[in-house]
Image (tube, rainbow, N blue to C red; front, top):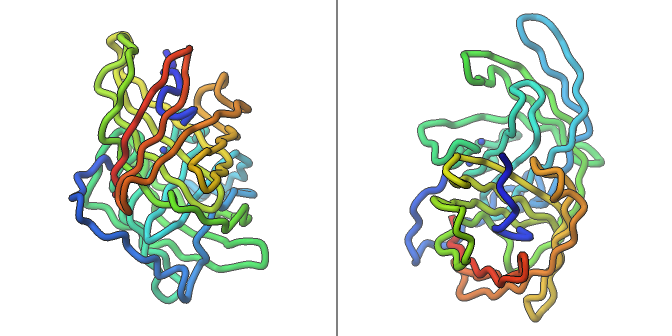
Length: 259
């Protein structure tokens, strides 16, 4: 059963608490390392128990303001694979500390991701990535830079409140990343009594009045891909924003807090 994209015509991932006076973290990557922006995967090589497999998939990764987020449909685990958290650059290594994933909040993990910058993006190597069931994989990923565009809404955000008259959805949670002219959202909710988790990502454009256009590229929901959505956005302060959109004739309003 699929959850409708009610969070936005539009998110390793944790729905963690964040104080209202938290200051945005400046990204070290913008100083002496990998540039902040959106990157799309060009290919991945997976080694498991000595067997090497090449994969081609639709996947995005965004780095901005000391945060990261990625999302894709993972053929290895036959499920969605989404994560987000803190990112810091140190001597060719991106240290990623997940705070939320497709299951919900996470803690206690840290990954040293070896990154070699290329003319078109970067290559990322992860040794000993552990999956459910105890599977251990080594992965080499090639990424192409999609955009380094910026906006006032860039960052990793956690949904605080949601105003909607949809009676079939409860326990709705969302993480959203904006950066590099792209967005990602991750939703965890209960729909008609059953738990669901969905994601979507695409391009993001917003003008000075807060009128944004989100064009879906890839999602776990086939009916969402290719949609073009108008979203009204307002930055309340440096750590909070609201977005409103029309869904099934109804205006849905959501408020987010910076993670």
